[in-house]
Image 1 (cartoon, helix red, strand yellow):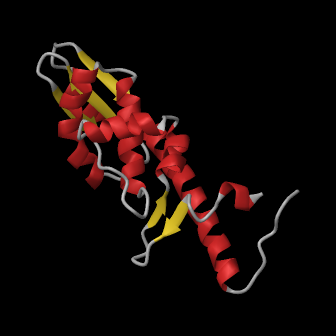
Image 2 (image 1 turned 60 degrees about the vertical axis):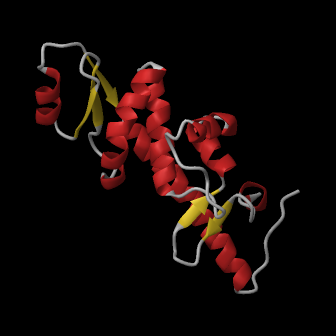
Length: 167
């Protein structure tokens, strides 16, 4: 059964230790189509998948944009993402991670604590708060499960072990 789920084309371990998933598997985890992900690449919101597949950063970015599109207009997503992308690359998901988008000014702020959130929303202008933390953690947990399963399967085969095939 594991062979059906984790084949050599869906998951790769690079020689530098970076674990990667295929674009198809990442899209399945996030719940979007590959066509949608590729449209984000054409709009230059995210990078195309590399030859070795998609890394953890790609998973975080795709999940964040997917969540933002549920709450913001396409133009607002582009404005917000231009500000958030660099910040999210430096931030580890987990715990509170909210985005506060000020619709009038077009500013996007990451709030990691209740105090940060309060400071961001008391402007008197219309703001939208998008909770990202739990979703990003869920996607990263799935990413880690799939890459760990592939690593275990690859190591078993490398040691001369057998792959089991289910009927």
